Length: 291
View 1 (cartoon, one colour):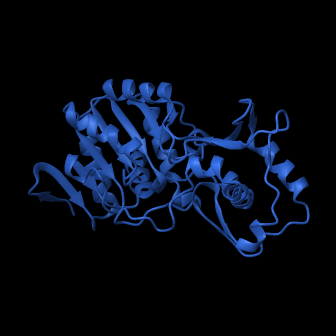
View 2 (cartoon, one colour):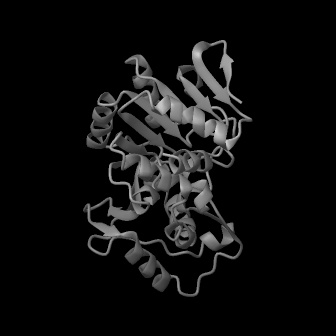
View 3 (cartoon, helix red, strand yellow):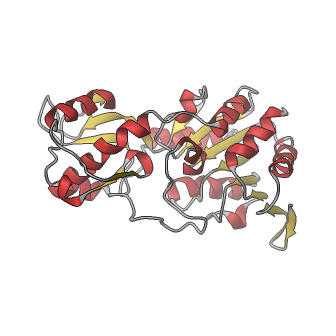
């Protein structure tokens, strides 16, 4: 159950509370604020079969993702990225929205969300019906040429890679976060990576890699939505990446209350008004099922 935390008289946390109790606590908190800025992370999509990166302590479960500099500066990294992405894409692209996504869509339909900013690149919020979505880190379903800027849907590229690598096999493979996959190292060496059909340039999914900055327009849209809100709700994110954490810090600095629903610790735990540690999809579904 919720308990008072000595860091703040308003801060409540729950690490063993029931789904119903945490849904009640979150509803009581949300009912105090007419306009809410929502930020989501990988924890929202794990129930859809998309693995996350971090454990409950906020530490990496696996090696960190490839950086932009390595992708464009090392041919072996470029080949490895596309080989793994080619294997991971079918499962990633067919993942379906879960109860958490649908609950946030229901929340949006009440007219109380200024924006739903997601750090995920899976478009599951949109597929669940949400419209006020800002894809902070981009979308994996689009591919851009780093040479000429041509943009194409990922589905077409997947078909082209299949044709180019018709006799290729990844051997043993396992799903990894964000459409990636763990595959046999020897198999990577035989994979033919894709290049732009217009200029021969390197291709990159339209997502923000480590070592890149969030596009300025996307950032300013998110800041405007935060400034229009009375409070901020974080769902399924440890906020260990600064691009997401900074919004919690901004909210705190301007006096807007912050609530977090996430399993395990987060980078913003000392800034929050309400912290609930539970299954985010189950809590949100219980909350909006009784709306």
